[in-house]
Image (cartoon, rainbow, N blue to C red; front, side, top):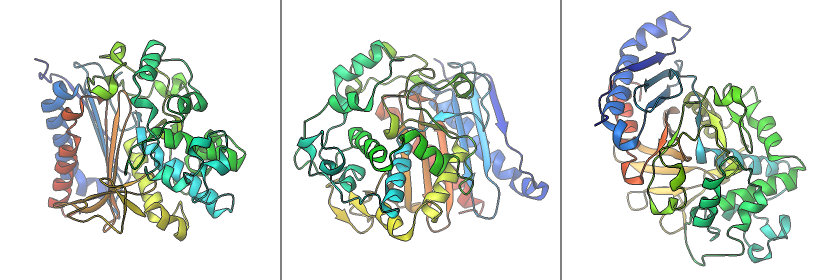
Length: 394
């Protein structure tokens, strides 16, 4: 049984302010303990060997903690708060924000149709950009198709074009599906970004966000296919361990380190690499008004139910999960109403929670994709929140 956590490699960032460091010492130690306990108890069922955490509370510096069990799976060397993870579908908020900025610039409207911007897909001509972004398009996701996953697993360094990904499901529709999660919708959104801007998606998100000093991202990267060695060398190894039915076809990758494989299957739906600390910076900018003008901010945060796909004003006890444009909202009894997302790729998970009442952010990275029933990172998020609340930080 591999629950024997024998050698933890722990790294913490020490804030520049000695006074702040002293006041946060107890909290940091407690958070470190939370991560270590989770790793000890969940290493085997979730196949994790690295966890990174970043906490931002207004008025103080980020607290960053990372733990790694190098004797379980080997996390590619010592895990530090600067270690990189694939952030998965957290990428979708970058894609949505790009389209919303293009709307503000007068280059499109999110109520424009696929037919206007991508006439090569007439079966989907009446679907609006808004519906692509809030997952009510009725377009199925290409990564639930076994043949596509098998093709990827057989040649996982091959570059998939956006057109090839879309072709996996075109011209299919799932009429009246309500809320239907679709990576295909975000590949189409990426294509609209390029058509409306006249530039590569890569260049647009780098210029607008990744290299924007007002946002302050220092360890966030995007490549449409393979990442260079200087980036993968900073990534923890990530492991695929899912036997869920929607991953049929990926069996050849089971138990493998996917760090060096192509992310061309994800692109604008999930291809960004970053750190938990940078994700907290992105959340602060996205929800805090740095990224979007008021009209587009309202559009970003306009919700549909994740059950029915119908418009809701906000989440409630009856409708406790809503989806905006690439962002999720949840109402929890112990945390209140939060913005959140758990992004997942074949070997990584990145979860954040943004607390609109306090503007605090928690972001957690883990280095595996386990079976869905084994993904219990929400319990770790709760433990972190409870510790922050007990310390008077929330």
